[in-house]
Image (cartoon, rainbow, N blue to C red):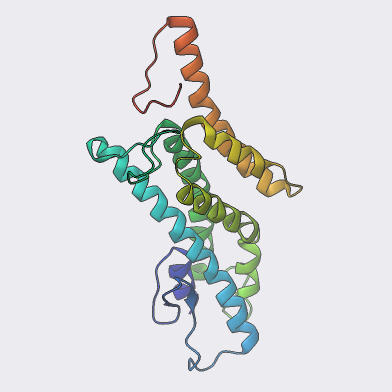
Length: 217
């Protein structure tokens, strides 16, 4: 069961956690031998897997656009509103790299939990309790929903968050009293800021602008 849980946390459904049309991983109602409290805790953990898959799908999509620039439809502010809108450019690529670093930490936590399960560390009767796994992923209950919402907003309004305008969205997310969330959002903000500073330095110091996506002006 716990291995099925780790599979769900990695974004893959299985026999225990079934992916429904809304992409939620849910335990079938006729699954035996599970108390309602256990089922609730397991499904709450599995929601992180849904968020993880949403983020990885976004990263894979952007990576595909970066690898195939001739197929891109770049829409700048004031551009053709009838054209198909995609968010592309150096800023969103920097954002994706920063998101990937967040996912690496999450993947590391999954691996650590698997090691704990296999070695039966901190066990009770030979089984690692679900409560310990819940505690290990505690911060991601806060982080992942907000990252998911960030991706939704970017996908819904690609023309509004084109280029450095994406900084406006991220800086709003930094205004929070939750330290874990603020730390992550500041990392994303810093990654995107580096692109802007490189553009400014290249233009003002060297009089040359490497801007293939037309984001600077």
